[in-house]
Image (cartoon, rainbow, N blue to C red; front, top):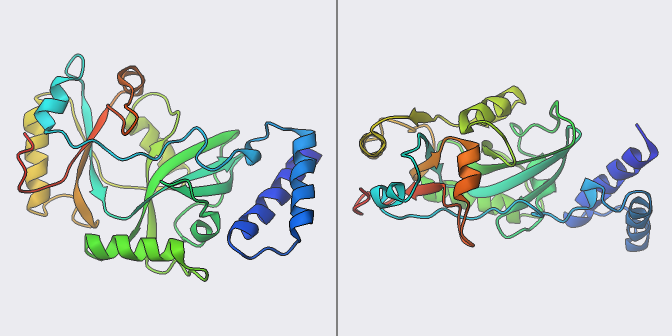
Length: 259
């Protein structure tokens, strides 16, 4: 390990404690530590602000057939449960968990280190950013979201009863499924998913009906399903608005005309 790597590891450790209100060094010492790392490598990934380059936005909720009609070439899609919890992004640098943040960009690294099924190390080089959901096992959606949010707010969180489900590998290549397979290899829990390549509108309608009847995704606290374009290159081509990715949509309300 180089001097820069050792310094970065020390900075990440104290930054974690500092943001959790558990600092063991003075502000002056922390500032000196940060400056020392800046002097060695001002572009080191550990110095990136939380959320930088990784937007945790929501999802659009257009009627599905309308959304799908806007996509080019009738693409294949993947359908996943829409877990009701708290959206979280996590960052690894050379395999070490260094940051975690919420949709509002608030640092929650300390809280997320307490989640037992969130890997603290992975076999990967460079910077890896992953999006997922913090949720409560075995609870209805509203209570799941409340317990997850409470954990992130507490000064003395425990992580009991909470899990992390990984959904997205930022800057991944290939397809959504190949990226999910990579996440599994790294030790993440990923939720169930279904690929639909033909008759997509009818296929999604069937899965939505099955979700309503608790025939699929019932092990999770869900408030809908999520549909994503399968191919990552096509996702990049489709792009996003200022509010949400245009290559994904949520189907939530059981009473709303979604087709």
